[in-house]
Amino acid sequence: MSDDESLDYSGEMKEHYKSDSVAQEYHEAYSEDGNWRHNLIANRERNAVASLLKKVPNDSVLDIPTGTGKLAPVFAETGSTVVACDISENMLNIAEAEYDRHGVSDVRFQVCDAEEISSTLDWRFDVAISLRLLHRVPMDVKRTILSELGAVGDYIIVSTAIETSFHKIRRDIRQRVLGGDERNHGYESPKATREILTDGFEIVASKRVLPVFSQEHVYLLRPTE
Image 1 (cartoon, helix red, strand yellow):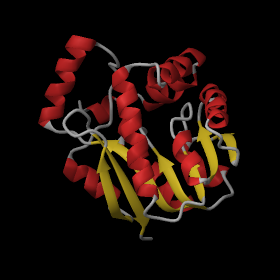
Image 2 (cartoon, helix red, strand yellow):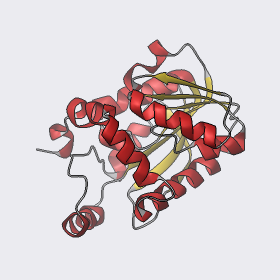
Image 3 (cartoon, rainbow, N blue to C red):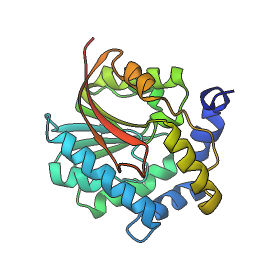
Image 4 (cartoon, rainbow, N blue to C red):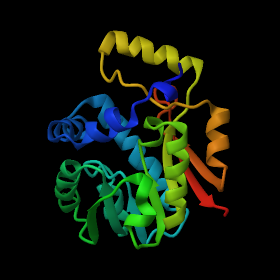
């Protein structure tokens, strides 16, 4: 059975992040005083998003899932009007404080499922951003989320994790040494990832978050349909 087939998206992902304790742990891990590895990745993600945002109009932005407000510093620099959405009210409560701390005032917070964006939000955005979600969902949900992002965004920025033999070995060693998240993930090969992303989209640009030490790539896409 593949990771995709054994991935319990509703139980392991959706319900997992609705927990208050999980929201707090997530925020602490990625905060400036948190886990150094998580903090490094967060900074690299922000740099990648900021770089890609400069390539396109960004007056209005959708951030889903906003998590606990990781991208607030980026939007403070761009001055974008932001709709920050998440499936977890607990995540949104923390994100609201983060956006305020970074001086992002033109922001609206709303609970929203990434599979139902177009039916929940009556907005059109210059850019719809979704970080650290696609690699946690099965293939059919990936396609749904991408379609929903493309329905509301003139451009979309998404991240996903590329699966290779090297990263399988790296993850196994890291798990044995450091422990951590044991949930299944919806990782895809480079070929499968490209096929998914180019089904209705043009890849305008991409950034690797942390070469060698991270599987995550961030893509700037333009809908073609």
